[in-house]
Amino acid sequence: MGFNHAAPACPGRISRRNFLKTAIQTAGAAACAPMVFPRLAAAQKRPLKIGYLPITDATPLLIAYSLGYFSHEGLHVKRPVMVRSWNVLSESFLTGKFDLTHMLFPIPVWMRFKQNIPVKVLAWAHTNGSAVTVRADCGINRFSDLSGKQVAVPSWYSMHNLIMQLGLQAQGLEPVIRSPGATLAPHEVNLLILSPPDMPQALLGKKIDAFCVADPFNALAQEKFSAKIMRYSGDVWKNHPCCVIVSNDHLIQKSPIVIQKAVNAIVKAQAWCLQNPRETAHLLSRDGEGFLPVDEAVLNRVFGAIPEKELVHPQWNAERIGFQPFPFPSATRFIIEQMKKNKVEGNTDFLTRLDTNTAVSQLVDPRFVRKTIDDMGGMKGFCRCDMKNIFTREEIVEIN
Image (cartoon, rainbow, N blue to C red; front, side, top):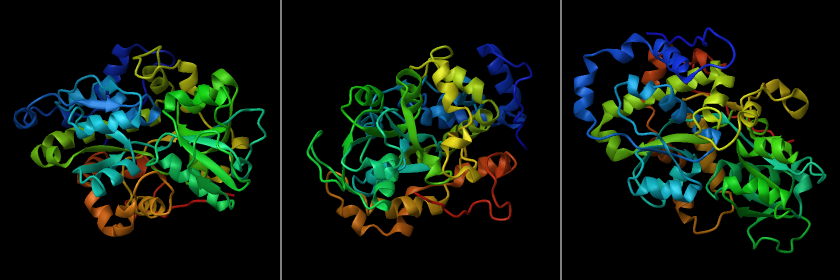
């Protein structure tokens, strides 16, 4: 059965009741089939617990909950719980506090192959969604201008660290890891870890010169502090993954029906967000459901179009944040290969020993998302794909 991506009939501000009504109408009759629920009730022993960081990377999880897509799949899901840092989110997942969450793609690589945690990537949460942000008056306009600067990323095992180091190395600069404010050689750039909510104030207070992070913190710095975007991440790596949807392999093996239903809800939420960007911004904001601690005006920047003059590659038609669920193996391979080259704190011998192709097959379980995509009529609603080879693509990375 195909999926109706239609937007709400009434423009402008819409109540949550009308949002929910629209979501129910677009969910499709198959989601409500009563014959499924007895099996599902037996499979789901307790409510699913979802954790998230207050970033737009979590959008599909939050919208799936807000619009009732989980409940329409017959799942009992508690309201998602917000935490402030990747360390807390990762530790909460490891201890079983959360069953389902979003994670920066390199984190489950580290979890599975260094920590031997049975984490599985089920789908991409979104594409793009991040940027390098600087003060408007600092004279930093490109990666080469970051020489001798202090740059914050949210985690060593993050797409932001990966993209930042790609950009620096392409300009002949050397990423280093030293104390904040340490004296640097002209060709060095000091990378340090900051929690995403702390980055805009650190930039304003000149404790750092730039940060690379997910929205809404780039948009917040633009809106509140007149900061500027040096480069959008999707203008470096075309339609790259950032956060992925993960769960524990034990839960997947024990309750595949529950996982399939959860993936159905998440992918339907992604499709809805693509058709309803302003409504998505409203629901996530303080003015809506309050999932993210920012105003709707800030999120309208995130879910709006990027001005062409701010793009190096306007021909890519890069979205500030996009939604495409399939975990292309080519992207996973590229991430793992780049992680082997990146500088991070701690021992990285596990990456040296890692066979990339084996790692891809062990880390990612695409069964559920492929079924959902097929049931929704294919990939045409999510990307400009080669419809003859919809589950393959070429990774395009250009730093210039």
